Image (cartoon, rainbow, N blue to C red; front, side, top):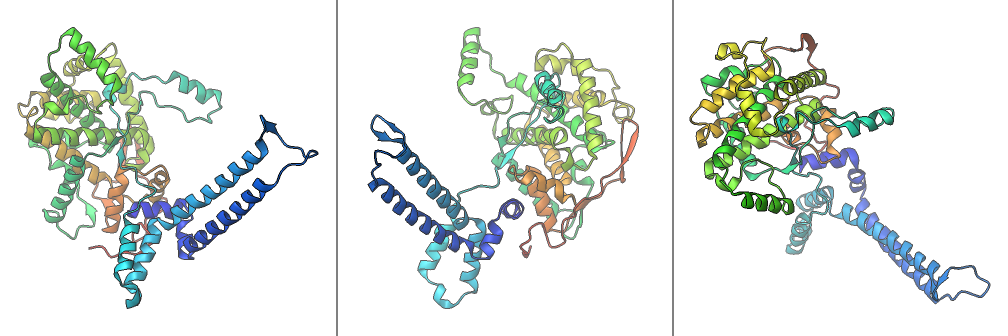
Length: 467
């Protein structure tokens, strides 16, 4: 709701209108418009055209009169819709509740409470779409948008240049399992070893979620490296889980299954959730949802991540180029998995942590270790991945770059914006990085300076007390 207030504050006139009593004025305007419209329609209806009048008639029907009726109804409907938006907006609810609390005892009656209850239960426009973008690099590395590239150059760069290998997946509703895991992680941060008085996100937030065997993979040169390495490794584990849970079907049953999926909404994940048991199912959903969402942020919304946009682009382009050279010719995800298993690049953790290794080589080392782990097809293995991704997302959220989050509010906002707003209320705008510089392809780039800092009073112009 707080993010919705922020969206209205920047992209609508509702706050100013409510502050000056505009909903009541808008209601009066609606009544006046409807009354005058009805009087005009009645006057038009009783007026008969003369012989020398110019008007259009089709089969004895006066077309000009019909057009006039349509225009009058359209104007009335427009005024009515705007009145509903103002009357049922969150700002109107806020003002009514404040007047009820601060007003005299005459306003505190059962009728006023019923009106407030009915008003608060009415939601006409949802500013927050509650969706997560998705991207899987193993499914999109060979994507070449030739048509979009032609349009980009044909329109003299008026159309945004498409991203090689950046085939965005369909946005999904945030699962209840994802929300619950994030709430549990927030509770553990508040009551755990980090204490209640922290003013920055600790760097050990996500590194502590993995076992010592994989701790080396949590220490990468940049956050872009970290996201890509763990995203591809998580996708490799998903492919292996799919191979273990895939039911054996005959050719006819396989054809009928594919035909059925054409008419039904496809599930966002590879593995059928019905084939997974309770704990494994929940952790599988959390790990894959957030893994693909972080990859989506890296490719399409890099300005919301700590790394500089240039760094994110260079790291992603280098990974796509390397993936095409290594995985070229693979026509299925199973063949991609086998190819990644055979990639040379070191076999030990120390070699895997070598900064000279490429991302695909690091993925091959981490992926082989995860796939060889007997717990990876069990609840404990997927719980480790789910905890890692949840805490990594929370670690990436704090920021002083208010303008970047503001630019995405009009389209419904990003999922990470929720946690940015939450941490801003708590006074957490920073994270304890090991250094202020990031490196990509041999280029050292200073971390971005905030363009527009979040005010100390919070992200929303309405002051509130935070527990």
